[in-house]
Length: 388
Ligand SMILES: *Cc1c(COP(=O)(O)O)cnc(C)c1O
Image 1 (spheres, protein in one colour):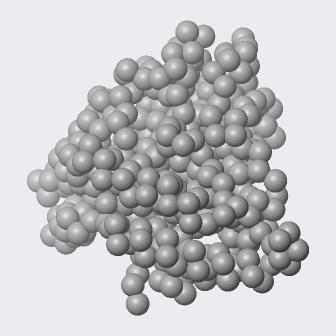
Image 2 (image 1 turned 180 degrees about the vertical axis):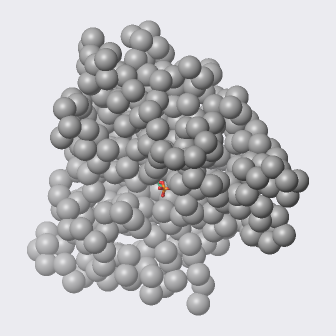
């Protein structure tokens, strides 16, 4: 049976070249970068070179890039580290209702510990209002944390405009760019981004490694205390294979970014035009144009997302009904609620996320199977039948 992997927003296949790079550091080059003998220094040099490659993806300086254990750690560190280090300035943070749980739950934790959090609304396309952002800034505001692109609906926020507002008001700007890094152009200098989170496994790199960019001069407390690694900012013996694999993946992503943005969005647009043409009672979620090249998200009325996933799985298609982290819970996705979908529509949503490994045949096959599955499920739905 055909296997079609359309869940690249959850994780991606590790590139062959990335595995080869990592194997070197799991093999002969297993030294500890903190050791002074030549063998440790080889590992140390590999990390320096990885830092340069990662920095170049976002136009940062290499000494502004700190390796972490993934996107969730980077988000936790950025938010907790900046809020505690700048406690004298204030206790207020502004974020949005559609952030990843790594940001939302961190903010909830802070709120329980004496901090004040403002959650900005988004419109029906998933965009924040710049005016509402500006109006919510007050004397006690320390930082704004707004994601670059949403992992469920793919909407890309006006990042440069947000950066300009933050700068004008003297507040720091963190962006969770896990879905955007290596996929769309990012320039932290031009966009006035002070802190940025990224993760390797969303760009065909390994799981459990990520980075936080921290603009030079920003006050941030450690999240992980211990040894002197990462300029004393993030303790723990470095994950050398993971870091080198991340850099290899980032280097490849940067080199091929323009081509991939073009080719992947052609596949995305085929889904976006064909699905509403061939299936009735569907609604596109997320902004029609300001969206990630690989993101497709539709709600199918009268259908339960989980059943849709199971039926698609039986056809060899791997997809998601929102966020991998929310499956297992009965609550509809907080992102779909925030864009104003009623419960029953939110429950019938499907996210297809593409990568460079998908083909037009994958798209055609998926659309064909989707038509059949939606039809079959609707025939079992009393609501759908009664409506006719
Ligand atoms: C995947 C993801 C994360 C978490 O990254 P991990 O490396 O899996 O911890 C955070 N934010 C967004 C937007 C994501 O898509």
